[in-house]
Length: 178
Ligand SMILES: CC(C)(COP(=O)(O)OP(=O)(O)OC[C@H]1O[C@@H](n2cnc3c(N)ncnc32)[C@H](O)[C@@H]1OP(=O)(O)O)[C@@H](O)C(=O)NCCC(=O)NCCS
Image (cartoon, rainbow, N blue to C red; front, side, top):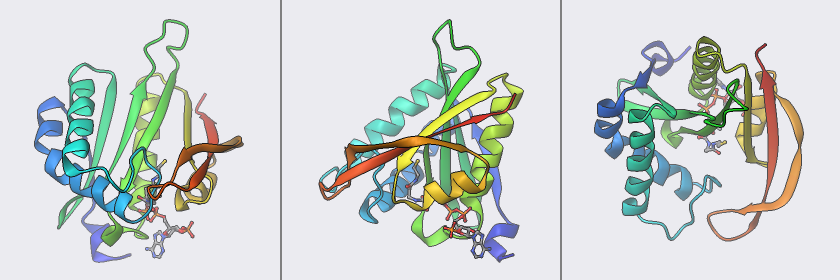
């Protein structure tokens, strides 16, 4: 185990902590997009776009619709993940995992796995026992989700774009915690 992994802490942020974390979260999102991750943004997006995105998420945390996780090591916040609690009356048991992001300088130390394990534990505590997510068919996250026992439903070609404008297929997964 590395020194980074030893000092890792994963916190669920409240609304104020989410606001305070925005500069670090902007940097993580910027880094992921700059390194070619298909996570909702393009090469031409700016830090101001990322900041708007995280402000909306912080508002969702404050409103109770989103659980926002931050992974911290001695360098500060280096990873994040979200649990979106589905608000539809007929889906009170369901949540969606989104924006599992680890800064490129902190990858391959188990932080992505730790974020997923924590997100699943919180979902279970909140009675959300059916989880769904989707990810770039060619990304490292697909291996992570398979390794953690998620079930692949299939891949939709051309679902999104890579940051450089190339087509990106999205692979959909679910995990039942029931
Ligand atoms: C996907 C992502 C979150 C994974 O984060 P991570 O912290 O590197 O994840 P982990 O360390 O748990 O696992 C990644 C790899 O490191 C390996 N690993 C974990 N700990 C390790 C260690 N101590 N030493 C060596 N390798 C290790 C894992 O086995 C895994 O290998 P694999 O890629 O061959 O399957 C990260 O790559 C990322 O942010 N990508 C860009 C954003 C993205 O696409 N997110 C998904 C959106 S749905």
